[in-house]
Image (cartoon, rainbow, N blue to C red; front, top):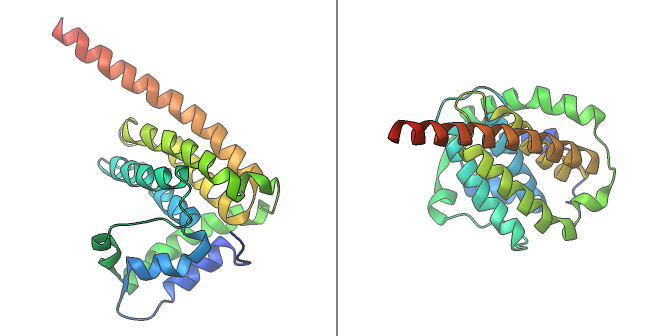
Length: 199
């Protein structure tokens, strides 16, 4: 987490990777010591807007995979070779980065290095556990809008890691707690409704 580049700078650098297509492995390599943090941000971003199934489910499952590795203390995330070999068309990558930049730049204006111990190496397994719980919430969230608080929470935690801003991490955890309560209420109502039909 020692790179001086901000999140927006890193995304611009990724969009500038050469070639007609950019391999996922090249993107992860470009992230270097911020691979975990940027993966978390990228997995949270799609869920900050109303999204149809199975997007929250897929993002939640991949986030759980990444968070489990943080919890185990891996220095760099491991991804299957088949996934690393997949590629994205360079124009598509540029468009995705252009869409992500405006909200990230707005957050960067209020972000700075604060409570840096919350994003330090010793805190990574703890944050992995937090993100693992949030990923479960994403998997069981209500369709279309139920994942929005959790997506925002995941983004804030990831951005806090990139920017070494413990205040953003705490804000993400607080919003995540609200999102988890909403997801738990939805899951309970769903199970109760099914049980009622079977009685």
